[in-house]
Image: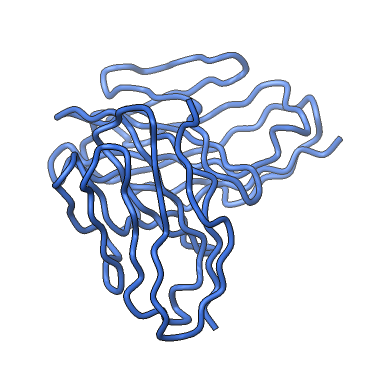
Length: 115
Length: 113
């Protein structure tokens, strides 16, 4: 199994540009999520999905869109990049149940710089 | 919002010593998890402890959970330079939205050879 893969590893955008961060998992996990990690801020949840066709907002969703058309893929789209979106982005996946969480599997991250 | 708060924020020890870091949280939980993050890498799951468990071991790791105090500790025994990393705790919120993990800000551990 490849686990959770993310592309690209690095990206530089100009303010106002849009782009999509790709995330894929091959473990048949129902739950997938996107986080951003900034120095001193820990992990902040952007969006998550509990299955194909179902997405919901996390704590910092503004400026980001997601879709989940398949179990495997969960792309994150930046609509109009801003310098405040400079961060490291992690995708994670896990099995899902009604009570509690299973262990999360993380991708290697995408380091995004917006100038 | 961040629920978990790790303590200390940073810890520096010598190889062979034990490292203890703590996590406090605010709500009722189903389980609590600990993760490690090496510099520039994704997080790696270390251990999960359920709310009805008090202690759990995995190799050199020992995790305790005190639900009455809403706190957990992670002990790494006989530390090695390779244990140098940031360590995070994560909880769910049994009484609220149970679909979001809530993360602490992490403890940065440096193990000096």
